[in-house]
Length: 114
Length: 111
Image (cartoon, rainbow over all chains, first blue to last red; front, top):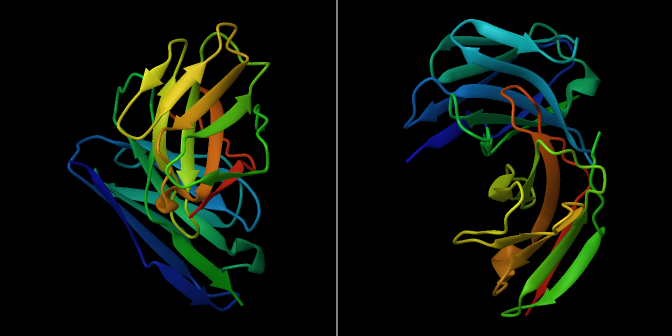
């Protein structure tokens, strides 16, 4: 069966510090991978998605970036965090070529920028 | 932009069926109806999806009206662990097409 992992689970960072969040998927090959952010009391916002290694599409211009160095690894980064970067970050995957692209979400990382 | 309308909250007695409605009157022919739920501080959990026909799996049943303008998620025997926010989403099934989670329905299962 497929599983998706995210770490860390929680993170508190000062403004201006760098960020690296990691997501890995097990039990599948060539997944499509996604990064979402959920702000408090709001819906999910798609940040990036990737259909393959080093293939990243950005949905929202901001101070975040994403990378996919390996097939089942997706990393979200920032060089300098802003207060507005606080939120619940979710990684998701769906199987390549799946008929309905149902996305499966990871457990999330709660980021607080102080 | 969420294209669905759901009641903000509902209660259900433990052991009874929970029927969660969703209105999607502007749904287009190639959009699927998906249901997810999110327990506090966890990632959304996929429940079920459908296009036209009613669907059933080990978690729930999805009833879609013939005109596809509304649907109902049915949890046949609600347990306390089903307390969560339930999201109804309509979406064209294309890679990279995001899931727009609105405010959902906060379901509380009462002992």
